[in-house]
Image (cartoon, rainbow over all chains, first blue to last red; front, side, top):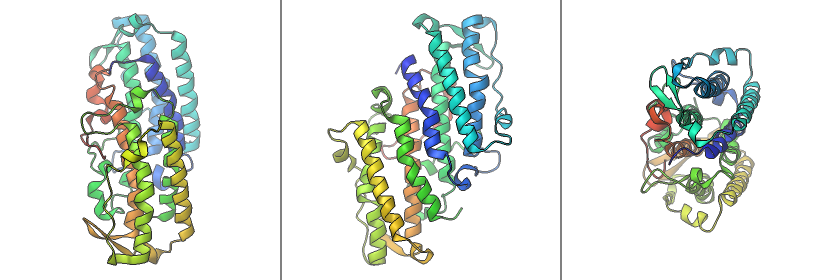
Length: 181
Length: 181
């Protein structure tokens, strides 16, 4: 389906509460274990989402509105979550994610974007021209990518424990074991 | 890691609230669209989870405790969700899932299962011998399989809307587009 700003905001507004309901106060065995070397645990994924709120989505949106294709986005720093998670608990990260997401959505709503603005273009460092509409749709799907990843990271911890069922559980067949998706 | 009953119960207790936070009152564009022919939408997945609560996990656990390997589990009916969702709203399904999950976890806790009981075996119609421990671990990973699936189904709706980013969003690369995972 085509991008719809209202539907995007609906979805973006849900992710913090969904991750909170899933993760807060879960045993560390679920939230602090990863999928192997150079992969993230659920705690680190929440840090990455916070980092995106601070540095990526809304600053790129503003750059498109102000400068169009005349300025190129800063590349997103995939190690940027490390500062966000240092000396923090998962509960603190969940609180922080809810707060920064809510602030960003408040700013996004206040922009009162019109259809013509959603077609404005910016310069991505790798893809070149992208529209504001594509950026905002990607923000929502980026949330879903990390919800998908967290469910897979957690399932991985029980790979052996499920015995013969492991071959039939879709989440255990998902191949994209990388740090950032 | 090895199966741990307490950790399993922690996770199983979270899924209804996580799905509620993600899905309740979202526009139908997110919850009523699927990934194509013979696939489920998010609404149907919640129906499938309810059906599992009613017919699968706890009845199989009881069968292992009462009959061991002398009786074979009933095969799980993958179309069984159709009765659960008929004439229901998504809000009703989310309420129902929370209720039946809570009842089942109350019964599971009341069983006060000891380590030796978790090693008891039952007969699966396809795999033959499975342990109670494997069944309970699978119940938890089955939740994660469907959270993984729901995030993928929803992301699929914005596949075109993300433009050039679609190639870099992990959830859009996940290949297991089947009805039941």
